[in-house]
Image (spheres, rainbow over the protein chains, first blue to last red):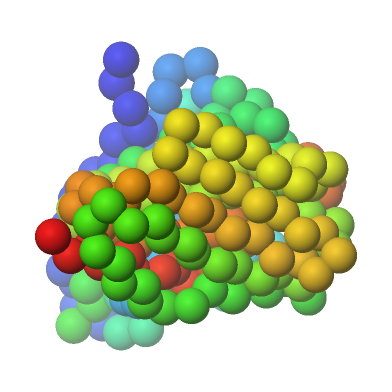
Length: 115
Length: 112
């Protein structure tokens, strides 16, 4: 079956611009996660959705970052006034339910480059 | 706080065993995981262990957990060139959100 998909695969934007990154989770998965992976580092948690609500947004670095999941399926990560330090691979993962017992399936990521 | 540490690089010869080590700081971890990342591919879950276990074996993979020392290891038997990748250790915290804390990854190089 289809896995987690993310679009676009690559995004180049200028400093100060607004970007949206999209995640399509596996059908039926209620939990959705966003992570950010900088070069040479492990993924860093950003936000977790259970259904439509953000159950844990403690990893969002500042108020330029925002994410939504209005219908409990597709999610969009929005970054305002992008900075060069936002350049990274943004990973989305989904799982059947919350908590460690459910495997998180990762998408291929969106590589964001801010020039 | 939450912190997961790994050595950055390991090189082995094909057919040898590989042992990748990880230490973590938070004693409330419920599950510990090993993920594999190949170039151009997404993160793939290899195996995991519940925090009340001390060992888990899955074909060529053996996970050892020393909860007292907060040390986790992944042993790959009969390492193949296809095992060359970056391996990440991760922990899941108590509280049931599933949020994962990852280490910085260990690059495994397998020489023929």
